[in-house]
Image (cartoon, rainbow, N blue to C red; front, top):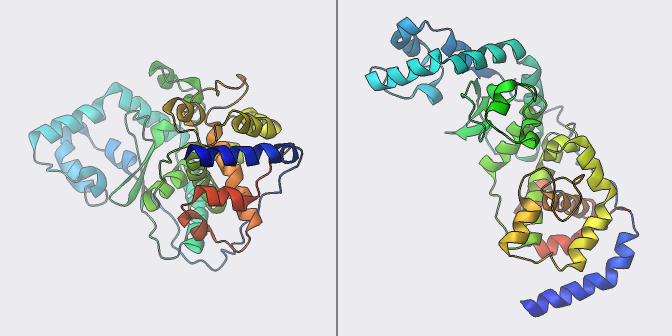
Length: 336
């Protein structure tokens, strides 16, 4: 294995001068005419509205009255005293009432998001006609910040209290880092939902080395290119726009650093963590850099692969497991 890595590294060094002087090709736009895709309009079922409309003094009857519409949340024994005590504590919590009021104020109507999701689902059905679409529910989570969007029993649930904007004071009380808080706004609702849709339908493999991780993460982001093509790139990857621009301006420098330091096939945990862990920036570069640079680089390689192989479908790309083959057939050349 070490010999193979050395040979590959030597080949890359020979090509490096030519690679870093070339500009990469424009991103291939997947052809997808969705005008004939016939799916029902997405309706987001608003559990938080139904729940907080119940009089806490008549909680049991109120919960039973909405249980049929919201089984994903109320699939429990509603005659059980302990369950009722827990639910009463949730709906009467000062924090949760504040969260609900803030959600109701910021998201009184979700029709615009329903249109966006319907459009994304049309792209999804175009590329994957045999895969199912989820029902979608919104709710107030009580600030479960680790999972703003989840899939449960095939349904998508969106915690609207995790999208109240970077100035919402409760986020800072959780001592969340600023780079996370900056993503907790309405611009990420569609992105996060479709990002989780990928996890539900496809397996994102944890590669054994930097290249394999790059390709795996790059596939996930290219899925967003295909399903939500109008979402800006910096939102797709979860960067501030200026950090996305930093990557574009420094792409050839990033690639040169990886090649010259023989990191492409590195498998040690420290290197993997450096290139794929979330954070404010990547420690090998300046504070102007974003974190997860390995993801961004993998995304560019996948884009190059799809550009260079116009007959490859989205499904075929996702099913290709050979990261080295993808790299070689991508003809990847970083932009100047």
